[in-house]
Image (cartoon, rainbow, N blue to C red; front, side):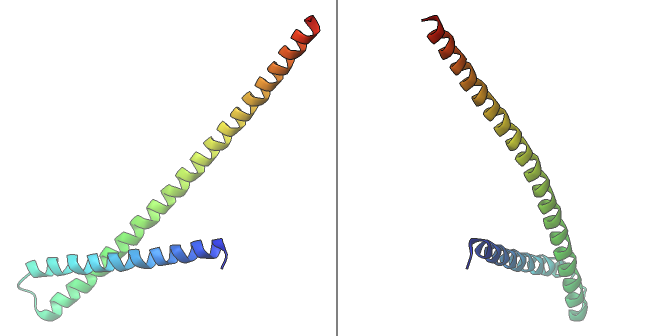
Length: 111
């Protein structure tokens, strides 16, 4: 298995674990909500819980998607800044070496 395949596998596992946790949270929240509605019949309670779980998971997916999009935007910004910084650092290094070489030539020519 290559490193890329391993990363993909880890991402898939993380995704399944996140989804399982979100489902558990949604079930708990749905049960808490329906327990406050004592006038519901059992069928109505199950229907409310099912609908609440579906809405909770849809909201979680939407939030995860927005977070992933923002993370990608930030990654692009930071990568471009890193490249610009690296170019400037390289230019300063080359300029420093050129100045040092010029100074050595001037000193050696004067001697």
